[in-house]
Image (cartoon, rainbow, N blue to C red; front, top):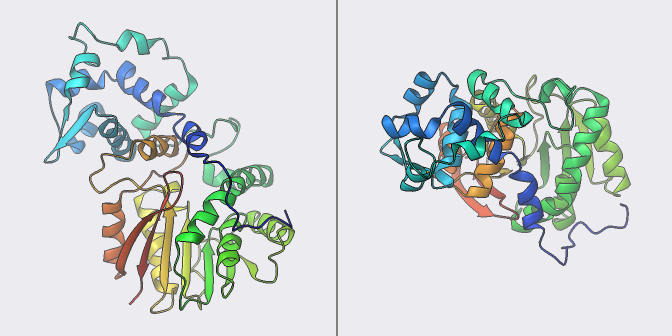
Length: 344
């Protein structure tokens, strides 16, 4: 770990390997909608807006939004002026009255645990557990357990070696001096950014016990003199002041809209005037019709966290309400991207 150059690129593109993992649960969400709710037959008979879909099927807004986005990206529904309709493909293959109806084919999957999870998530809005931690509490509470925190942070750290370098390559940090990596996990993104931009100094803001994980990882990587760690809970306290660059990487997608907006508001208050906020995540497009790999990943997040992948339009609205300006969007790597804005 000490000798590895975080600016180094791999020789081969891992895109499809990432997509296999990130899209793992999408088939179960489609199966739940088809087998349990007979969703496409229902929608074919009564095209509806999202509110009516939630009301009539007695399902919750956040998971319904993720489901509709996935089906739009798959070409199974289309949004016409706020009213959702089945597409010709869905009408032929997913509506019960069609001779080509595939419902019985998917019914063989009805006892898959994740498919059953989705029925509950759609009906209640409450998250299921991560597949590898069936005895865990909900994700946010589980992160307070040292064993879960170590395992989960290690998973995000190995991903960040590649994604962090991609973020760093696409950032223009001219005029910035101090980076605050908000809920920065192991500190891999902070380390990758200061490796690419040597004039920066960074602080990782993390709650216990992840702060201790971050300190050890940063020291092993040889960045202890340039990247420090401050313990704190972004949901319970204000953010540290004195920083002109904020990074929120793979954080907002874990939270529903009220909490995501709360985190952004805290950044707006703490960031120095003229400073830059960087949001690194997988983002849905402006019209919520894709990209399909991101819509699939959003389904996984909806299952196991309180969040989803937010759209560019949603982010534009939230950030504009807080007074941020100069919004820019750039693709980085493996279906991720950065949004940058400035505090006036």
